[in-house]
Length: 559
Image (tube, rainbow, N blue to C red; front, side):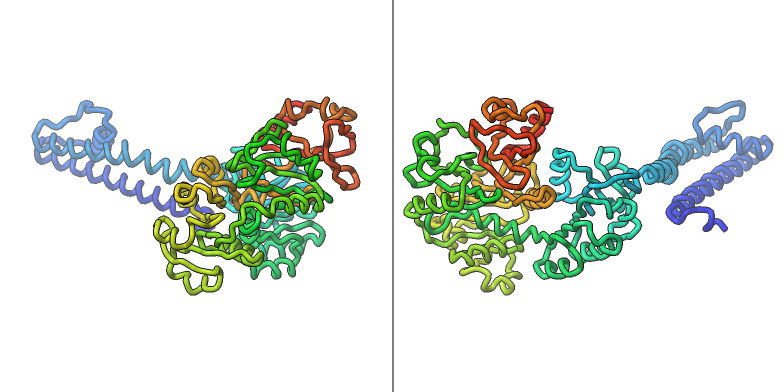
């Protein structure tokens, strides 16, 4: 009968409380018996059993001695034992037992009860994230910034309640349960992000497709073999983020002839970056190099060792600068033709780390005809990595002899692809010291380490989370994905009513927010480069380059 009345989760706590209570009753009874024996045989006094219990509780609770005391040494010694036992059982153990087995479970049950279990009635056009991982964390800030309603599914009600208190829109429920997706109104959702492991994402996709055949599903794929399977069962967009991370890192490599690295597209316009190292452009201002007059390209930003510097006609291009330009494919090709004679380096590129990202990076580079040397620490992976690179070196990348033997001294670029931020930061410093001219490209896992690795000497940094967040946002906004680097993004924002009809110069957007307006996206989807005289039409979208704080400043300035 007791098992029917008490929930299974609470039964261990009830048993623990009952055991402690029995121990306490037995101790009081034992001391009451001892009291009677000493009083009768040693003190020559006779008392009732109630008096014995009363004396035991009085001494154990340290309330002091009343009208009943021992006068013999044996009695007083017994009183000391009772007193110390009471201090331990009642003043130390009892509060712990109460909090551990009663108060804490009660608070936990209340927290579980307060965890949201469904979205508000009438919710639609929202984004559903199936787990709160690094991708979801990076994506949440962007969704908030763009005013897109979103919810995170958290299976643990206690964690869900805490997230709810912290202001995260969360729903508690099993990520593979049909009832959970009914509770989050999946049929009315704008998109579902299946960001769990591949096997779970498969089940999530099948569950959602039983409820809705139309809702878009973007599923993250850890393994390349899962891509076709997830597409087959109904995922609209499969995101092999680790493979794409390797590809984007490879696209930033300097190897062979100097050329532009295309990082994104806006309609018919391409966005590209290029190094000025060992070219006549070093030390000259943007006004002097006249890229617009010579090639028709707009310089929209300049990277300096991972930091984006303001672009003005007087901006000086240093040896490590990477101008970011925007123009047509023909214009980019003309710039490539100009750059091709400079900085020729056909030495092997060095990739450190033979994991999924490292292998994807190596595969992308070799498909372009670039020779690659790889360093992997784990000897157990030697067999599986055979043939992945042109030459494989097994050992610790912190070993100077190994690095030099792998070709660091002459390599045009080194890619740090381990999933250990501390190791990548250390290697960035080490590689920069051993070869000051090398281009250091690194992946990063935690956003808090971005500044550290840039200070360590990395020229370009990209994380799994930021790549995934930009990919999802491009799907939600129905645009091409543009990967500029950590900390900076393209923002597509409708022209505010207060700016409609004004020219870009008179809007003072850059002066008030720091955002750089690159183009206008027209209602039909066409993209027009922005100039000082461009009129901001009310039905268009501003395409702006900047960071999230600048985007928030824009919202405040042109509310």
